Image (cartoon, rainbow, N blue to C red):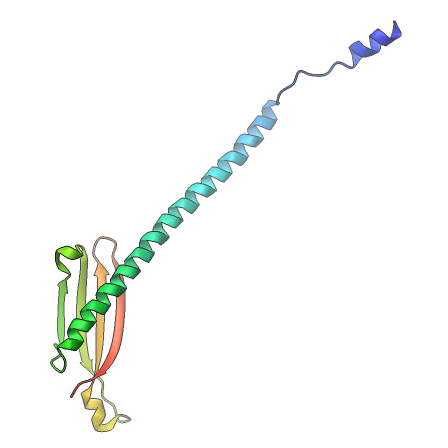
Length: 135
């Protein structure tokens, strides 16, 4: 008889989780999901930024080749867009003389060419600066 009373005293609680354990698990899952959501947003933004800089660099290179093919005639300032091929992208050109005592007479023939490619929708811009000797 003694054995049966010991067994009844050592009853185990029913299997399952307590409310506290469930709340802690849900809190951990919520924190992880929030972190993943933020990381996903940053990844998308970085991909868009990378895409812009890749496209803008190629467009700037193309426009600079057109400008250099027109040498020695360089406009002082111009702007425009890239047409239907790249809607939303604009370019702006500025050309200035580079003079100075250190360069002497040669300095009069140097030009600083600044080309800015911008995307109107996002307000991003890509700058390209080069120097050319124009005779």
